[in-house]
Length: 182
Image 1: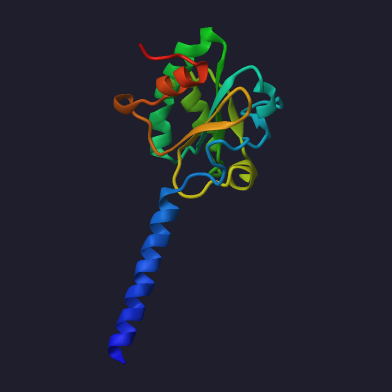
Image 2: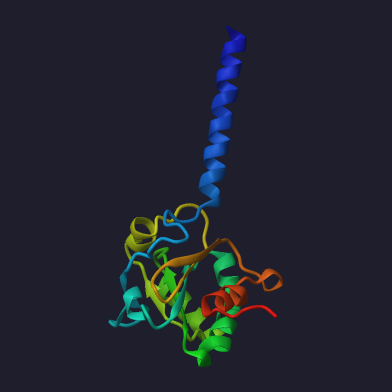
């Protein structure tokens, strides 16, 4: 009897470990090749709203889901600012940073980050987290990056920190632009 209980306990622990690791990795319920769900969110410190559909047929869009409490998210800001500025003149690329609110103090934290890094791209407020959780099905870790082409199709996604040593953004953009390697 004790052997059976030990086997059941071990099976339970294994299932729990698998479940937790799957959740921790996270990601989105939408998959590459899916139509990206449209949304309409207010810009930070503004009554102006932005919709994903505003860019359809015009620009490839990199969406970053992030929060002010996320150290990795904040480390990624200068990296994204550099990509935004490097691609701005081409006119076919936009970054939308979707803030998942943490509560009190967010406004001041975002203002300081905008000033510190001179963030040129829109920061959108997902106040009730419905865009992140219901439309995109986010689970687990952030930041989460979604790259959507001009036709509104999810082409790339990434969970966790992007780094300059293993930077996929130029490759993603070249692919979306139809640039062939020599």
